[in-house]
Length: 284
Image (cartoon, rainbow, N blue to C red; front, side, top):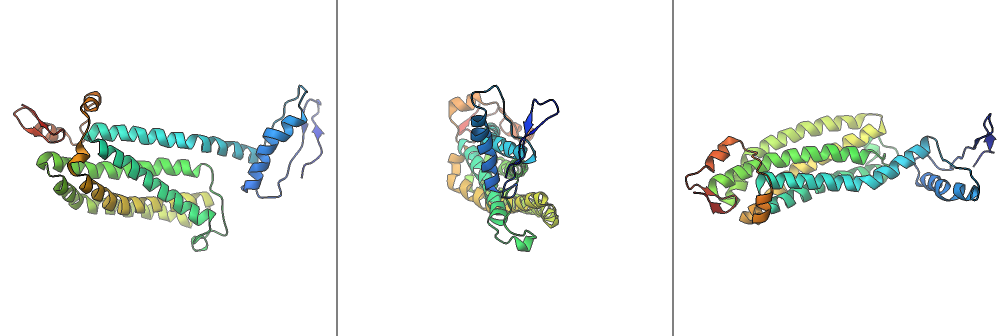
């Protein structure tokens, strides 16, 4: 439904209001807004000097959705690539960095899946206070990615630091994973329980966006700390063995050397013929 055109006091602008038969969040409303912006209005003033605009809250939300949808893949790619480079520079293991990037993305994808299943598909929605199917707010995926990726990287660095520390000391890849898991599992589990409890508290909110964020973040931390960090990471590191810490020589020379374990590890690699198991060689 479109109201008749109304002129402003100076007669320079004509305005009309379009009402969609669907709700503002409905896909049909988004399609209507895009069709008015891209096709209907430009064709209506074709051959004249007039300009057309679609304004209002719904149009602004559609524009924001288009911007987020277009930029989110790039943002994810850039952040994951930077995290990959940081882990590669710190731990000097090509496959370790690849594994970290892939599993962190897996955690985020799992949390997105939980949110979509509950809010868009309606799985278990009534039990969480969600009536019917609800569209995902456009900025929720971006906020979830920023928070979830930061938390998952925190757990990843904590666990990898202990594995790498034992690997440098013993040179036994399998034993290093077992030792690191033994001393970090309780800490990661307790930290995850605290974060899950905090995020889950937001699920009882009446605000649907807060409820989305609370459920997504709680599910993500739970999946990341249990399935990913305490199951997949140790399993993958055990299967990779010594090859996890391999890095091509030219790449090793280009990357800066960052010490995540402190000066104690540097002293273990100091002159005197101590074997540097990280690079597979020895220093004299």
